[in-house]
Amino acid sequence: MLQDMNPADAPGASREATLELYGLGPRKVLLADREVPYPDGRLIVSTTDTRGVITHCNESFVAMSGYSREQLIGAEHSILRHPDMPAIAFKGLWDDIQAGKIWHGYVKNLRRDGAFYWVYATVIPNVREGRVVGYTSVRRKPSRSKVEAAAKLYVQLLAEEKAA
Ligand SMILES: Cc1cc2nc3c(=O)[nH]c(=O)nc-3n(C[C@H](O)[C@H](O)[C@H](O)COP(=O)(O)O)c2cc1C
Image 1 (cartoon, rainbow, N blue to C red):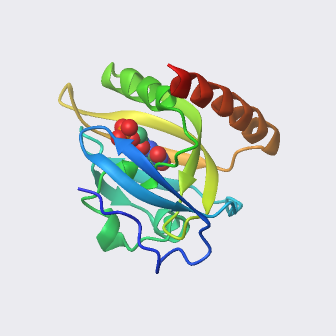
Image 2: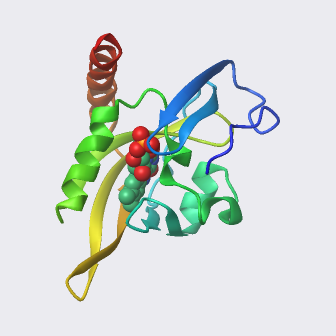
């Protein structure tokens, strides 16, 4: 279960939005239109169970998300969901990884303080004895030109989703 974002954690936030999370219902998020640049030379790593609940994350993940490790372990990965991300991007992710394939993509993530950061993510299924037991995502710093292209595409996709 994910709690609404706390205004005390996001003092710079200027907008509020409500996400409809799959299987979880609504979550109120607070948005500051401020990007935190992806740190150079770092990998941001997390592992989930088969439902997308975080089971492990590295120090860079903790630092960039703004949440404590205790808040992250056991939380749904949609704790980082930003309302500027179109649903179709995550549908593609889940379709691929549930079929045992690797997914790559650009993701705009929401921090605990309401700011955002872009990543280039590679998500792989973790297979043990022929069975998928969870997933791992490894993120790298994305190039500015790819972020700009993804941001433009996502505005279009989101508008189409809202119109549908
Ligand atoms: C290993 C793994 C990593 C993920 N990483 C992210 C992430 O960084 N940001 C994000 O918004 N969703 C991420 N997701 C997808 C979320 O589980 C979720 O599908 C997404 O936030 C959209 O929320 P919804 O499915 O409730 O609509 C990840 C999923 C998996 C399995």
